[in-house]
Image (cartoon, rainbow over all chains, first blue to last red; front, top):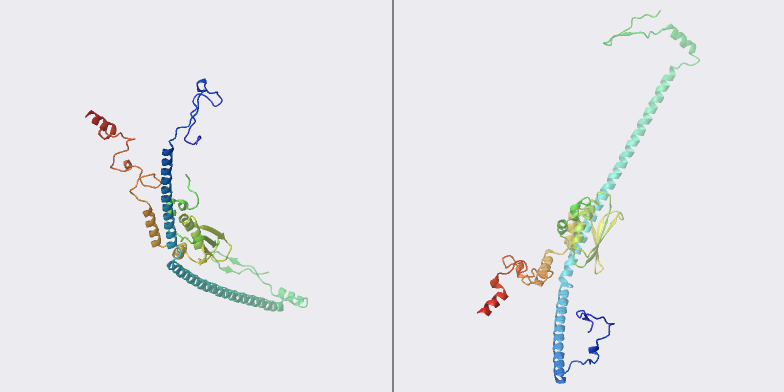
Length: 187
Length: 171
């Protein structure tokens, strides 16, 4: 080809727009001479050479493909591998089942624990309620007791008389050791 | 260069190449469902944090997807190329146990790996010379104990073709 990648134009000094030289005006471009017999022989030889090379290449290509396909076949679907796979899957299933059992066990334990806790809580609450009620009862009874000694308008006079009759002395002395002394006398 | 992340050792090549789980060629997708909280998911969390980079490094063509807080219990699911799905329950397991488990069920066995290694070594011959991509050496001058490359150290006169030709002409 005229413009192949390795064929650099060798125009040299002039560009394509400059007219050719006067000395080249009578130049006749003549193609190189060809010997017909030689040409035929050469063409035939080249044809055979290319045929043989193409055939060799095709042969090698087929061989490589064959090898690749055979490797793939031997590696892919063999009964042994499938069986191995089945075995491993079965083992995995067993493992999962074991895990399930463990989990159920754990959940059951947790539920029991929770129930126990609830019962305990209910019990403590009940007990607390009871204690409270008892306290309240006691207080009411105490109040009732005290009510007997309350001062009412009826026994007001009597109580006043009583207080006046028995004067109470609240005076006392105390020293650092804590001994109390009641010696003051009411007038 | 600063170290990135909480455990930057996970990003080192040495750590990644220490992963020993290589999946069979039939495994295409690995899905991990786990939770961010809870004692039972602890093993799964550690597995995702420490072991998944190693697995992905060794199996660059396996798609790994992580789902967080979608199910109450953690599990792994593998999708094989014949449509089969393998479920692995990982609740209450340590990350070491999980790796052992998946190595056992879906990893390439040691014999397979050795066989593949041998096949690979058979393809390339260590005694040939050529481009570095396909061969060990390009020229004998690279081997220790041989003559150094004449481009770096000129050959002695007696070994050069022009000297030998000159001597022959003279004689």
